[in-house]
Image (cartoon, rainbow, N blue to C red; front, top):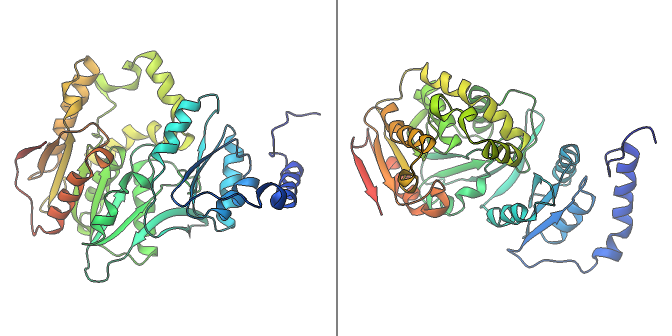
Length: 366
């Protein structure tokens, strides 16, 4: 052979694997079925030949399919989307790191109402849309770095009682196709804005963002303030989070290596442009005159180091970026949507019921 062999990557080999999978499906999977609500880890999914069979036979099971090849993952995503399968999420990873893979399985075990895959600009986008025709309010959720929309699984069912809710996986995450456009905040916000309108969701919106998703929602609110009814930031990234003492070059070498290894290629692209996104935010006028609640994690405030002190100072400062915002300290770690979902629900409902800026003060929620 004149080139390295990658299982399923060669076009002819790809066809052979699909033919093999379809030929053997009744022999190997005639009685394969997983109970509703199960979580299944498919290690080494390749180009998705078997994935479609597993997912189709157990439509109420969430399957996490993993492969070391980014090219194979992209092809598997394409095949799954073409087949109309919606209960699969993909992750590029090495199966030798089984502990991390199992953590992915646990973190991805949730499901959201009305999950679907749509097409936007010739790319598949995975999203959840729960329409509430009784009210006009629309709540839009944005995930953190390398996060999936399932982070909101305890929140969306409740908020859907009060408003139409929309959550999604940004391009390159979950079953959403990667795109060639830069992964900076301007492109991400503008893509989200157009995708909302393509689904008949017209402004104004209540924006809810966790971590890096909070940074994107800060940009949305400043870039299109007339389209925003209110904002809830959930332990949001600061526009200057990774500058000065917080710069990645100041992190311990082992942590930089582990962090970069764990991130998907899309997340690395977002990280590479995070400072540019922050600069864009700070170049625009502040978002004012409408309710903003900043939920901040209390547990990290106990940590002491040069990096932790810098991160916590910026955690406090996020509220200062929004005049008349209210900062609420939550007895939680960074993962507030999972650890304290009730605090997010309460904040969103407060914004939905507000007719103007919320009170400018700090609160602590135990």
